[in-house]
Structures are given as structure tokens and as C-alpha cells.
Amino acid sequence: MTDDGLPEELRAENSILVGRTPRNRTDAVRKLVWILPWLIFLGSPVRDLNSGDHSTAATAAGWVALASFTGVYLTLVFRNMGRPFSGPAVGALVALLGTLAVVLCLSLGSAWIGLFVYVSVTCGATLPQRFAYWAVGVNTLAMVLVGLHVGSDDWSLILVVLLLGFAMMGVKQLVRTTVELREARATVAQLAANEERLRLARDLHDLLGHSLSLITLKSELAGRMLPDHPGEAARQVADIEQVSRQALVDVRAAVSGYRRARLSDELAGAQVALTAADVTAEVPAEPGLDGVPEESETALAWALREAVTNVVRHSGATRCTIELLRRQTLGGAMLELSVEDNGSGGSGKGPGNGLTGLTERLEKAGGTLEAGRTKHGFRLVARVPATTSAPVGSGA
Image: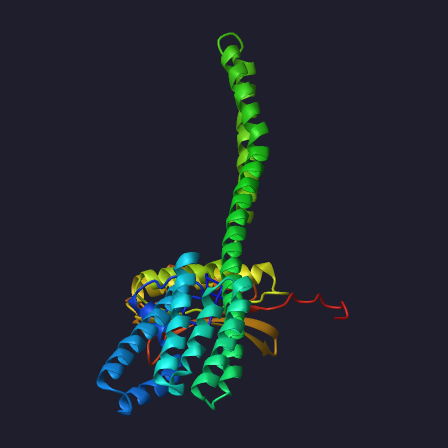
């Protein structure tokens, strides 16, 4: 998944964020493209105006009214995707659309009956749900009455008007739910970060509070004993050294747990780092690591960090593809990380310190590392066991 909750196959550069204001002109054009195909129902009024069956004045007035109707419709629906109008403004514009549809049908004939489709869509998409039910029904009834008056024979539009109106109500509810879920996800992430900071503060307080208090006390004692009892003062200083060393060991043990590399975090960091370096990145979704040993995940996370660092600093690449796969081998299930770019792979002739250390780290986890130039650039493949090895004689 991406950081806004969309599936990974919807890349950030191609996605249309539901319920969110367009970020730039490209977003606005993409959202407009989703609206324009629905203008197919305007084909009949356009043909009617071009038929020559109306006077010049009526034709000119018809074009002006049609353009006004289309403009109000597009403005209402497009603004509703991100920055909707206020309630009274929406109600007034919907009423204007309905009035234009009735007047144009009564004035210019049954060819204009399709305008009620747009009124129904607008009612479902922009009005509050408790009003939209009634508005769609009233609009359908108005279409039936106007159709009877002008002699329309296209009664199939009744079903279209009803279904589209209620369908847009469902779409609006879906958009609202998506926005709420996005906001809830951001809130949960913030709360989790706050809780982690509080937990770290509590742990450090518990680890260091007693030790620092003891060091302070013994320092004061040593200071008072130093002039008259240097031997006692020396023993206090030795105790201070011992307490300090133990506190350092405790802090390192605690911090090592917080600093354990996680593959999901490194994937997110890789996306950010590559994007910041103007490298087009293809990063997989957050992996499912059920059953994968922590040692294997940590080793693979460090491999990803080293590979991305090489891509950003040394390769000069413009494209990087990251893949994460599970493979079944003769030695058991393996988790394979592949990082491939179209760069040079660096200027060094041999493996650097980073790759050497990475090879050692992977070997300790029971994995392997392959790195080298390919026809199109440079590729690094790291493999680690995907399951915990069963002890010999366990019957597994």
C-alpha cells in the first residue's frame, strides 16, 4: 500500500485521490476526464439545435441555455470532488438546473428530455442524503410529467434517471467513508508515534533514573571524603565507574531493540530517498512477514538500505526497481530481495566495505548476497531464510 492507503498498483503519479482537492493541474484534468464522458446525453439537444427546426432566435437562446446548463453541472460536480459549495449555494444551483431542464424541454421539445439525467446525477452527488432521496424522486416525476406534455416516447430514461441518482448517492457515501478512513489512519499513526515516544521516555527513565541518582549521591560522598579520607573517596569513585558502565550496558540493550531495522520501514524510506534523488522507483507493497525470523527480516532490511544508498550516492541511475519474492529452494523457503537500477553501479572495481559487511551480515542470518553489473545496469540480490530452521531430531 502507499502512504495514502491506495493499492500499490495505483502509482502516485497516476492516482486520483478520492475525496481530495486536486494537487495540481494534472490532477484537475484527470478528474475532469472522469466527468466528460457523461456528457453523451447532450448529443440529442445538440442535434436538435443543428437540425434547423427552430428559429434563429430560438436556436441562439437554446445554445446559450445549453452552455449555461452544462457549465453549472460541471461546476457543481467538479467542485464537489474537493472543495464543495456551501449548502444553500448547492441547493440554489440544483434548483437552477432543474428549472433549466423543465423550461428547455417545454420550449424546444422532447429531444431535451435527457437533461433530467444530469439533474438526477447532481442531486445524488451534491445534496445531503436525506434530501437527495426526495430530490431524485421529484426530478423523476418532473421528467415524466414534462415527457407526457411534450409527447416523449423515450421512457427508458426513467430507469436511467432513477438508477444514476441513487448510484451517485452511493458513490458519495463511499467517498465520504474513504476520506474518514484516511483521516482515521493518519490519527492512528500519530497516536502510535506518540505512544512509542512515551514508551521510550518511560524506559529510559526507568533505566537511568536509579543509576544517575546513585552516581550523584556517590559523587557528593566522594567530594566530602576526599580531603580527609582519600581511600574511602577512591572506593566511591570506583563504585561510580561500575554504576556508569552498567547504565551504559542497559541503555545499549534498550536502544538496540528500538533500532532493529524493519523491512516495511526500509521500503518506505527507500521510496522517499529514491524520489528525493529524482530516481523513478518501483517499490513493492508492504510485505507479509508472517513466520519470517526477526534475524532474517533485519538482515534483509539492512541489505535494502545499503542497496538504496548505493543507488542514490554512486550509481547515477534514473530508474530503480525493487522486488520482494518468496522462493522455494532445495534448502527451504527463502525470502529474496532484488534491487536493480540502470546506473553504473559505482566507480569501484571491487566490492566496497558496505557490500562486504552486508555479505557477512547475511551469512550470519543464513542468507546469501549476489551483486554485479547487468546488461542494463546494476543488480543486487539478497536471500534469507523465510522460516525458522527446525532442530535436527525434532521430527519436524
